[in-house]
Amino acid sequence: MSAQSPRFRPILDQFAPYKPGKTPSAPGGRSFKLSSNESPFGPLPSVLKVIADAACNVNRYPDNGAAELTEAIAGHFRVPPSHVAVGCGSVGVTQQLLEAVGEPGAEVVYAWRSFEAYPYLSDLAGVTSVRVPLRDEAHDLAAMARAITGRTRLVFVCNPNNPTGTVVRRAELEEFLGQVPGDCLVALDEAYAEYVRDPGVPDGLDLYRDWPNLAVLRTFSKAYGLAGLRVGFLVGHEPVAAAVRKTMLTFTVNALAQAAAVASLEAEPELLERVDAVVSERNRVCDELRSQGWAVPPTEANFVWLRLGDDTADFAAACDRAGVSVRPYDGEGARVSIGEREANDAFLAVAKAYPRRG
Ligand SMILES: *Cc1c(COP(=O)(O)O)cnc(C)c1O
Image 1 (cartoon, helix red, strand yellow):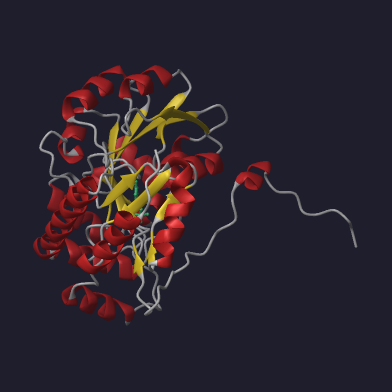
Image 2 (cartoon, rainbow, N blue to C red):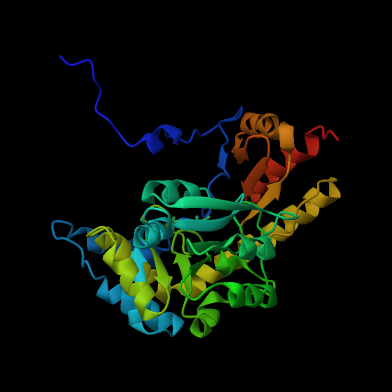
C-alpha cells in the first residue's frame, strides 16, 4: 500500500466542509427556519399536481434544451427565447457563467459581503476574486468600477444584496454600466426582484436591452417557492445566453423542475399575492425591530440584516434556544429571513429580550 494520498487541487483545502443545517427546537418543539430565505408557503395545489403528473415519466431524460420552459420564460417576460438560458437554480447558472469566462488570469469583481456562492464558484472555476467592501451595507459601485482591470471578465451586482437587503438604483447602476468595458460582463443577480417595492430600483429585464454586456439572473427558488426543485435562469443578449448554454451540465434541470417552473409562471398572480404578504411582514418586522432600538438597514428582500459584530454567534445561539434558526456570519452579523407571522413573532421576541451592547 502506498503512503501517498490522491492529489487534489489545493483550492479545495480552503473550502469549509459542508455543515448540515440543524433545525433548532425550543421547549414545546416549536421550530422556525429563518436561515435560507425560502418561501414559508408550501407549493400551490395547481403546481403540485403538475409535479405529480411529471413524476410519472421520470424513467425518461428531461428535455436538455428546456424548450417549453424557455418559451414560457420568454413569453412571460417578453424577451426573445434566444436571450434565455436555464440552469440548476440560479446558483447553477452562476457556475455556468463562471465556467464560460474562467481561464487562468481572469478576474471577477463583486461586493463583499454578498452572496456566498460567488467566492466559492469563482475559486472552483479558477477565476481570481476581487472583493470590494460594502459601504453603508450597500454596493460601492464607484469603488467597484475602479477595481475593474483589463483582466476582469465578470462583475456581480446583487440587487437586492444578500445578506444586507440593500439596493442599487437605476441612475447609479447606469452610471456604473457606462464605466464597464464592453468585453466585461455584468451579472445582475435579481434573486429577490419580486420583493422590491422601491420604485427607484430598475427591473433588469428592461435595463439589459440597452446593454449587450448586461445579463440578469433570476430564480424560481424564492418568490416562486421552488427552492427544492432547483431551477433558475439568465436573460442576456444572444452571445451571452449561448455561452451559458454551452457550459450547462447536461440534463441539469430535471423534468419535475421544468414542469413546475412552467406551472408557476402560469400561477404567478397567486404567487405574487404571497409575496405581498411577505413584504407586509417584512415591513412589520423592520418597524418593530427599529422600535426595539435596533439599527436595521433598509431591505427590499425577504430578509433583514442585523450588524451584530462580535455578538453574532451569541445572538444566533439565543435564536436557536427559542427554536429560530437564522444565518450568522461570525463577527459580522446575522441575516434573518421573513417567514410566517408566528415565526417572525418568535424572532422578534428574541430580538426584544436580547441585551444590546454598544
Ligand atoms: C437564493 C439566491 C439565489 C438563488 O439560488 P438558487 O440556486 O436559484 O436556489 C441566487 N442569488 C442570490 C443572491 C440568492 O440569495
